[in-house]
Amino acid sequence: MRHKKYEFEEIILDPLNVLQSDDVFSLLPLDRINQLTQAARVEDYRTPILLESRGTFAEYLWFVVAGSVDLTLYSKEGGIARLPITQGHWATWAAVFGSKPLEFDFWSAKSTTLIAFPKAEVITAVHDQPKVMLKILEQVSENATLLNTWILTATILTAEQRLAHLLLILSSRQHTSVTKGLKVTREHLGMVGLGTRQRVSRLLGKLVQQGVIMIENGQIVISSRERLEKLALI
Picture 1 (tube, rainbow, N blue to C red):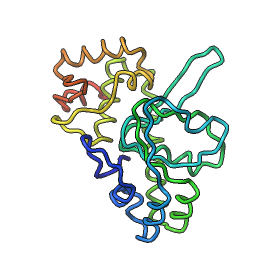
Picture 2: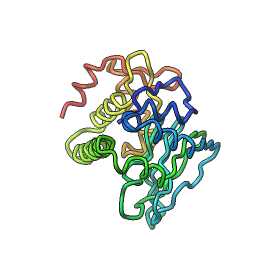
Picture 3: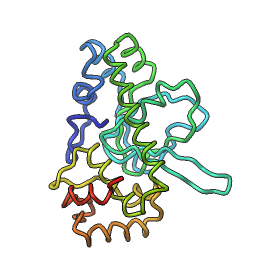
């Protein structure tokens, strides 16, 4: 679930604003919010930086202001797979509350701005707040459902349908309307299993030809959500 008041055009650098506008943290008592605000720090990365290593435990919960945090796996043969956590989302609830070491590396993408909240402070703030914990479980469940659906559709949808399905997910998570573009790159789309940047470009071109989307200033604009939903129909 996305930060509820985060707008595509804005850059939010105020930790207090982020917490008070969030579906989860806004449920906390004010003194807990203030404690988290004081513990937070803004991180700005111009080049990719390794934030957390596979096999370790996460030390921070990051709010992605701009850019992305890429969950990354490497094969023995040198292959790379990435899952980007894009702006307006948290990286990640599962990492903070999981009892096992991370299964992947956390990398910042280039030109990424984050607000880091120490894991220990987050757990202290929420552990005795039932409403907050239920909201966290809701977000983890939502993410797991989206992931399971994405995996299952791999064998029953065409590449065009999968792209349409993914754009629907991203637009609903970003509250994107016809007048607002998706802040997502071709590389991001390729990272989640749609292939190379060139292949993604071809697939996007087909959706443009069908009048489903438009590309404006490098952003994907959904011109007909109804057509997109029909194309992605499972």
